Image (cartoon, rainbow, N blue to C red; front, side):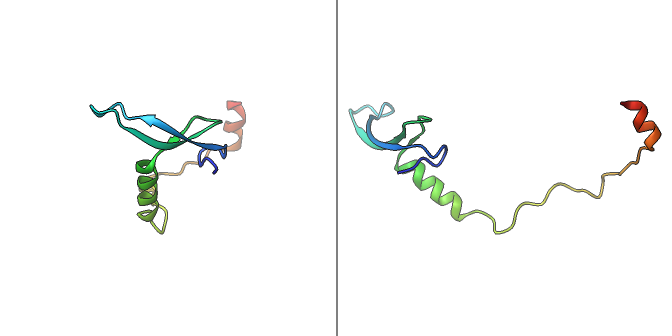
Length: 80
């Protein structure tokens, strides 16, 4: 398996669930290069987010309010 963050090698590991009161273990993958840990919840959220992606990119802010100015070349040369 390949890490989506750095394209490094993923290995399967067993982790302790410290948030619960019981001694429960869960399996996840960890990247050897960057240390990124992915479990079933992370993968499900990533998959759900990719389904909800917009077909077109977001539009930038209002550009009609921006006033374009021009600087004469002799003024620009004196600024250097």
